Length: 448
Image (tube, rainbow, N blue to C red; front, side, top):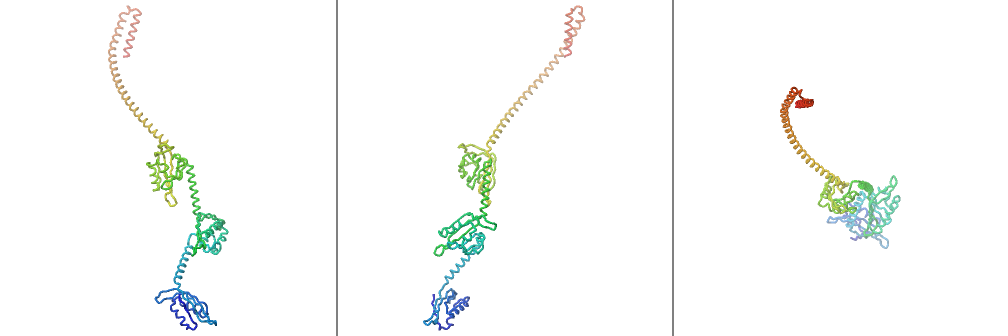
């Protein structure tokens, strides 16, 4: 700071010789202001820039107070020149930061408001906040509770006042607020943050309010929840065994009653990792298959697959038709797997029994066929033997018949001679017997 004493008797030109150091851009205004205050004998104060002999530029404030003697005669000015370069630079930085802050607040998609004092007077409100409130910039300078008179937000106002009083940040997620819209009351949902604004002495002089409209996400979550509930209801009511595994760790998030029966462990499996709930799966292919489905996003299906499970503390082999279906989130990333299974153990066992029976039947049929073939062979041999016997018999009969025919002819001939030569000597009985003998001989001759 440099003190300056200006006497009224000084030459005016000499008085203003220091103006040669004033920066060109400020010179005209400084000269005009100095002359006016000097001529009017009033307090003088002016900030401007000066250029040193080494060409450096500094900002100064020149102050001067008119002086009078005991006769109330003007005797000159006494004052000082204060270097305020650092202060000016700091003010410029603060102005830059304030412009930047104002720009950020104004352009932010998040609703932002600055509230002063415990009365929560609105100092700043960006377009996003004004849009939520269905207000314009005329609300600036008003108390928040008056602006929110048509909004069910009195509990929130009390929370904001608590922030001012306690200095603690208030966070509220998915908060329901009833706002009067153009068509009447509207139910909206917001994520709200209210933080204290502190001054240079760390004292609280206001609060900053930030709110993001969560209504669309809230409604989407409700829709998703409703959809998930429908999905769970479908699973719960399904006669097919279903289970939902979440994450790559395959946490059992939900199972219906048919699947609980398959697992054989009761409701205790809920919330556990599959490998922990069913340790007997270790060494079987299912955990690896599920991991592949989770990583690739490809559905896997299988039929008549054997699985060793401990059901009611008894290890046994069961058979299933099952499918592993990946579930995708809104980013098309797998977040879980739906397991659907049908117990086909009885069917598989029945099929195995049927196959075994068919095998036995085929073996019996083969044995029977071999027996028939052997018996047929035997019959063929017997038939051939019979044919040979028939031929021998025919030859024998032919030979016998030929030999007998000759003898019969002799019997008939001798009988005829006997009847003719000894007719008178025969008795009636002898004639009868001779006649019978000749008839029998003739019949034998004709039969041959």
